[in-house]
Image (cartoon, rainbow, N blue to C red; front, side, top):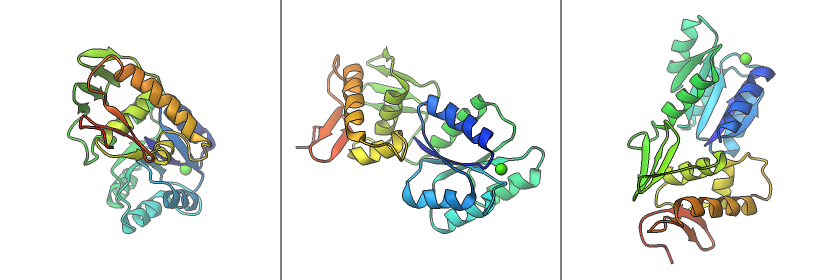
Length: 227
Ligand code: CA
């Protein structure tokens, strides 16, 4: 999951960045509304965490502008405590949810997971392909009922693949969604993680679900591999 955090308070931005990175998200930070909007022109984010009080362009304005442009990215707005009006304005401006400062990190992650589950591709919190399951609430992965332990990045990669079943995901798409935008030389690292994932979720089982699509990228599917 690739997340944009638009927040001018450095400590708050760093708190969110650190926690989300540890949780396996790829995070970009924008320090004001103008820069936040600029990032959305370059990257197709899965989620945007948007503070309301921002220099240059406030969060409400950024949110309205994104929606007016047809951008449907999930937006979680951060509002100051007791500012009930802000929450109403935030939701009216097109945000999907809001979180009141100060908040615990656990609460933030729970909200993000709940938001991600609203994606139309999904039918519920548990993603399934053949006998492989991934529970986005508990981050538990099983194959044929056997629990599988994964690193944070491998989990994030598997979740991204499973959110787009049967679709070819290029290394660029994978790199952008799982690692940071300025992540260089992604190909090698992605291939290493794919090998690791295959070892964990495919090697002991049939059919093999993680497929290489020659010259294009990877996909997860229980259909016959593309030739
Ligand atoms: Ca602020």
